[in-house]
Image 1 (cartoon, rainbow, N blue to C red):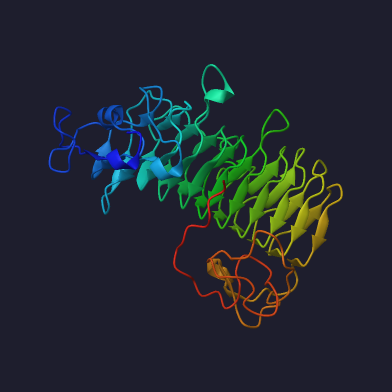
Image 2: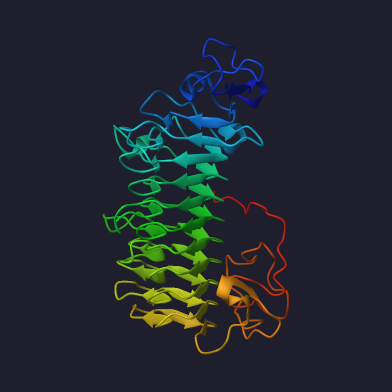
Length: 385
């Protein structure tokens, strides 16, 4: 399995047999059996059905790749609906905690943690320490649902969460949709909603280390499901974290920066109709840059208690933002919107939520959408390397 020249497909089906060849015509029965035989560059295809097992380095070695070019792929067979739902008593559906399990892509799965004791997905390290962490994991076009704790707990670096639906996770407001404690991670194009606590929570209890994470192009809505605490996204304790191009509505707080955050950047978000603050920069945040955000319908819309916060080119309350359909949270702009051409040219937001290039007019628009806001084809933004 050292190179793509020897990459093979391993097929798994609920009607398969682990004594079979693992081909399309003669699939294996269990995911674990396929993983025992797979390696760099291979693709493990799961065919339609609900599998009573997960994917875990605690169950056996998972041999990932050495780069994205020879990543191990674990994917639903194209067009098939695949659910991972291990039996009661397990801790997690997906557990990656071994440096050998790096450069792994998980695609097209429903990760149903209803029977689990903890998270739906955890990426972290085990003995001898952080040097044994899984890294360069990409989970894409998948669902993470029904976990009693966090949907995804990311205690590692260089993890990419792309086009996920993360919802109905958690049983207390300490349980979040996505909880990130590592560095250089990406949350891109996800729909994160109706989780018990925060939608996306970036924080490391050590006070540092949750650095350079990017939360971009997501719908973060209706979190704080229990009616108590929870922001759409919080950037805290780390340095150089970014929240850009997100559409954030219906949470307790929209975007929160606090608790030792340094140089966070909050750019071109559309934040509307939270039950409390729209954007809140807390007293323990330093050197936060908050620009080109459209904040409307929260009370208050903007709170800034931070140290050396930079603000400007935000459209905050009172001025009707000119949404296409505010009642249904379609925040694309009408031609009469005051947000059009009202923004600054900022680093990292050269395309909008719909991947439309900025600017379309004389200057960047304010908020997540660039007028005319015609949706471009769904394309993956460049990965963070």
